[in-house]
Structures are given as C-alpha cells and as structure tokens.
Length: 219
Image 1 (cartoon, rainbow, N blue to C red):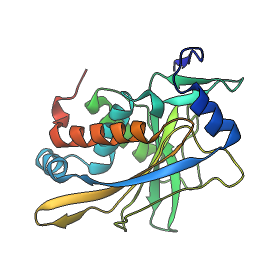
Image 2 (image 1 turned 120 degrees about the vertical axis):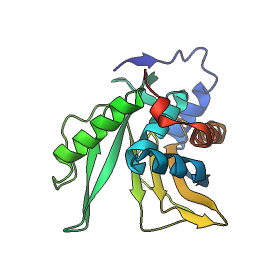
Image 3 (image 1 turned 135 degrees about the vertical axis):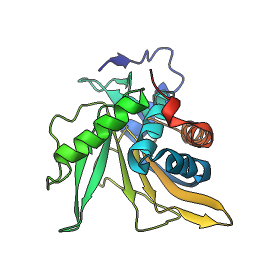
Image 4 (image 1 turned 60 degrees about the horizontal axis):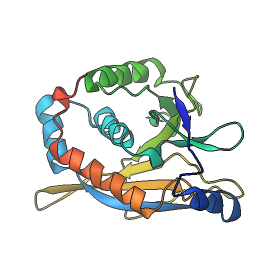
C-alpha cells in the first residue's frame, strides 16, 4: 500500500476539501442506470460470474480516478492511495444477515477472479459483520441489493464524517426491449469528489462495461 500526500500549496481543490471536511461536512449520493447488456452477454458466453467480474471492473475504473482513492494521514492531511481494494458483502440465506469480505485488487482479472472465489469459499459462510480479518486501510465498499431495482439510494452518517472512500450499491437488473439496465449508486464525501469527478467515474465505468473482454485482461 502506498499513500501519497497531496501538495496543498498547488492542489486546486484545497479550499473545497477543507470546506466540506471541516465547515460543512457533507456527502452526496448519485444513482444512475448502467447499461449492462453487452457485459451480461459477454459473461454468459464465457461462463463467468457477475459479482466478481463487475467488482473487478469497478476497482479497475477507480484506479484512474484519484478522487475515489482518497484518505487522510495521522494528522488529517489528505492524500491518495495507489489502489483501492473492494470490501463487499455476502448474504446468508439461513438468517438473512450479511457479512463483509474483502479481496485484494489485482489488475490481472484472472488473478483477482480466482482470489475472489477462494476468499468467498474460505470466509463466505462465516457470520458476523467482518468475516475476514485484516481489512486494509485502502478499501472501498461495494454491495448488491439483488432483490430490488431501485431509482435512488443514499446512506447517511449522522453525527459523523462522510466517508472519503466511495460506498457503492447496485441493484437488480431489468430488461426492456432487449436492453438490460442496472441501478448503480455512489455515496461519497463532498470533500473527496465533486459532481464532475463522479460523472467522469460513471462515464468511464459505462465505457468499460461496453467494451471489456475479461478473458483478455491479464498483466
């Protein structure tokens, strides 16, 4: 893990960061409908699972967006991590609870995919909030609500600081006239990202889903 402090003397968002971190600490939520038509068809042809494949795409896109890799050091000064590892949820059918898991991101899709499957096989049946110990500091949250196709989603932190890292939730895909769309919500601190940053991230993620062939992603 590498954390690089931001040079506040040259950072264009230094006033925005301090304002939304200290004077008006707030976050925001954006929900869009991702087109997953081609992505779903590609996964079906190749026999790949949606959850780990989609999480890899999100993690890969985050690498190109420093605003989605932000954190603070021990003195509260902002910086960026070199990469972010997904912290995701697994659902327990027996008692209808969920647990958090994490898998180290790897830019080689086959490496990540196998690590994800291994982690779920090892820790996925453990109940409680944290099924796997050792969660790194450079993580982001992603979870699925597969029973619901929603049009808006927001998480709140009453009395606390909004998270600098993104909290992502996606829902049930729905088909209309041959097109599959899926709700995808981003919750993030305004100190980390403005609307422009989130829009760029979402546009890049959609572009990746439209073109990616995951069997060719290996480094």
